[in-house]
Length: 342
Image (cartoon, rainbow, N blue to C red; front, side, top):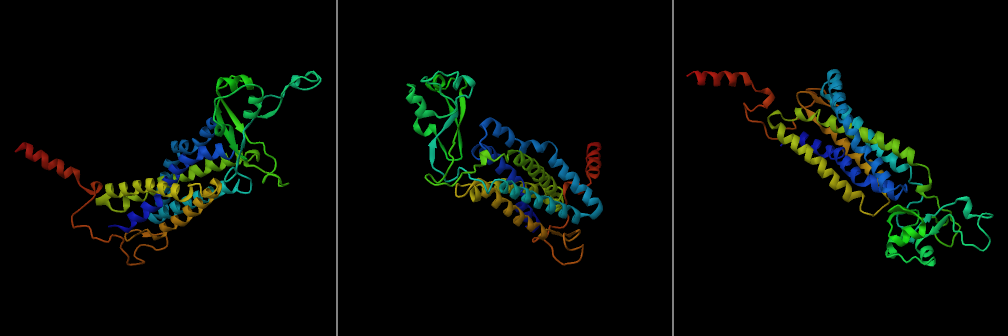
């Protein structure tokens, strides 16, 4: 029955919910768009969770520090600023690659693999008329032409234009390609698209934007975790008698935020980097709800204590009901001692 609890439930969905969302989509984004192996993409995506080691606590420390100087208004302003910066970093992450060509909505082509470019594969080391294959080859057609009949399905051997695919090799493919690894990364090496035109492709995986993306993900994650800590610097003041209920509501809002973000933005209806940009805009928009959080005894972001006669507690708390931190546990202990003595 407290409006502040509902507002914080929504806004927390756009920090903790974003953390859960990025945990779901980041590895796939770096694999599909940046052309990294699943292993490396997973390591980079783990940066998001790794920042939990310190960033959430840092948010709580910032909340307490601002409260010492400006009271509750400091807690609210710092939470709004950090979560808005989170939204900005989310937008920046998408903007890094949005002008490049992506695998989204592209056709499938034969996946290629570099079988080697050593000197012996070229003249004069390779005798004239000899078969010395070198460089990038279309794996399925090449191996079949060499007499190696793989059991892999055709769909496993194809990739999207501007895309990559991790392929688990069977023995004929290992023998054909001369590799001992179980997994290789197939790539698309298409130069022009649409096919038959002179429109040069500028694929994300060839753009050298991965380093910038990693830095942005790092900073983005720090702001996400800090916003979570900043929220729970405010939660204990919402309703002392119902602190457990409010904490549960706000925490559940984080999980709900992830469900909403995944279903709004990551449903294959748009490019992943475009979805990330749209998600960043939503973060900034929903974070504006913090402007409506008001405490009669402390004030709000724009109104000092007593400046307006608004009480977010829609149903008054019954007289005498207190929070656990407001109770005199010593009095209970003394009463229990007297009972034992009697």
